[in-house]
Length: 340
Image (cartoon, rainbow, N blue to C red):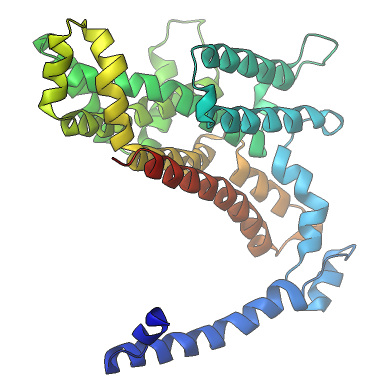
């Protein structure tokens, strides 16, 4: 009841409450009518959707496989589906604190190898599928999971290097971090896609998807490094002195005392970076990589189903929201657990 009283606690609050209530009454009923009440769920063509007058979810029903899996061979789409489930399960498995053991790295290697086998094929009777045919949700997950898995340890090493007492190491790390953080991700993607091949020896090429992945890893690692550096500075100096008094070596001190405290302090910002990475994978569309957004555009190119871009983008927005919200909730759980 005390929170309800705040709605009319003052004339200003009362006016805001009335305005917000009026705005909700003006927006919610039409939106609900368009999204659900007048929406089409079983139309066989676009004309049937337009006659219904609401959202055309029949478009999603007809095109969901193209949106989710891109131009991956239709009869083989069970493979990217299984790879996506494996990636999501791997991340969920890694979120359980009881499994934070050394053998977890081996689990990651095996799982990622299985994902590669499923997506590429060429072994165990699976047909070969070039990664230029990958697309949709599996590609987004691959870019995000590999991006986090590779950028996080690199970012931690960069943070340690920036805080190092060795001048050469510190200068190199500072230069890298400031240089990468000083440019947008889209510029790195363009450089990886257009400029990098110009500097390679003749006859040597690097796959476009791999170049995009490397650009993402290098970009995210710089932001992780600065976040971890803030966590290192938040560790009380007495912790460093206590570790030194125990005679611990540098890596022993960092692994057992300093880094656990530093990472626990910056869980929220780190997860924020991971969420941004997951959303920023959509930028690879500018270099021709067939991500979830590009797959939706391809589905909209069908002449028989044109004009339903709102439904397509709401569908992929819902996918992004589910993953980002799950990461956000997990972040809050970790922060509560590690509160002093």
